[in-house]
View (cartoon, one colour):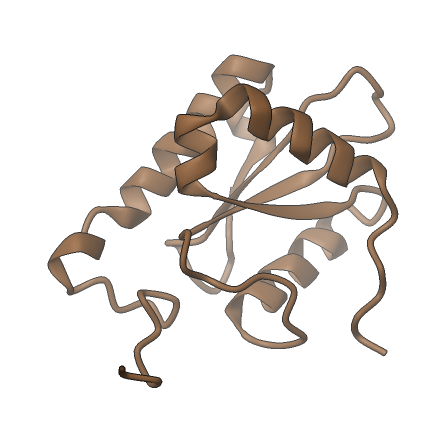
Length: 133
């Protein structure tokens, strides 16, 4: 066990199984935009601090609720108060304060796109509990 290993969350994708993960994240985001509607110029963004972090805006039947979906690696934790994921979440909230921010992993987004869309839409419709105290 290596507690200091971050599985690429620190930006180090040098381990062979992680090398193509940033490209996978981009492809999965674009796939979901193609499947569910969206314009990559408006509905696809990269983190301003880390170009390997990407999010897309989920198109829904409710024009008021179009949550941002951060694409994460399956082994990354979501919902923490700090770190690069929390910074990206804050960046998306600043960009579009009316929209919720949710997070889904590349495994589900690429292999279960229909079911993931249902989960994301339901999660985006619910009010997220404030964990920042």
